[in-house]
Length: 203
Image (tube, rainbow, N blue to C red; front, top):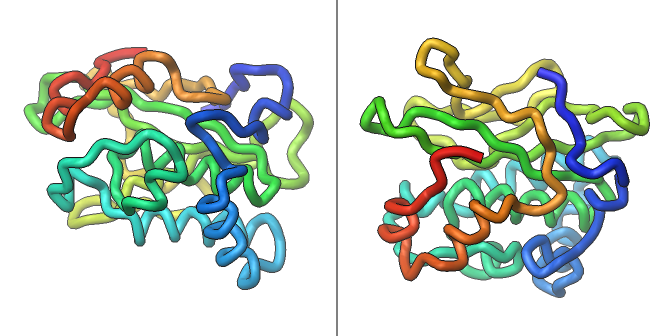
């Protein structure tokens, strides 16, 4: 699938804001801890991906009721749903000078009927053209039985593949910031149960 930039300005995918707050000391500290073991953008990106995937449990897996939406808070509390974990990974990538953005799938929920939006990350690695994204999307959701997302340069290895027969969709747009529907759901939820009841069903 060809990814398209929401913003024509690649600088938008390096920017810091209230949500992707990669200038926050906590994000910088995490990025600095990852950097010594990385000998370039590819290794740093993989290290950041594995750090978010493996050390920040998805709150639906862990049962943590807290809702996080700011990258620095995700790193502090070590919890979040896929949207929050994608925000944290995007912040860490930008802290390492790697342009990154948010992208999404519409999948069928656990009941086999209800659509849910799932959050992913896309990043631009050296060697790609000015308007292209040099790596397929990555999924920092966190692995569990039946889910095996990996950082792969040879084709996507996401938690889930969108299935046309179930009207599942890969949205091609790479967002520089979370869409309003996603951010509203995160910021307005008092706990994870309320958040899961009010997840957006489409973008």
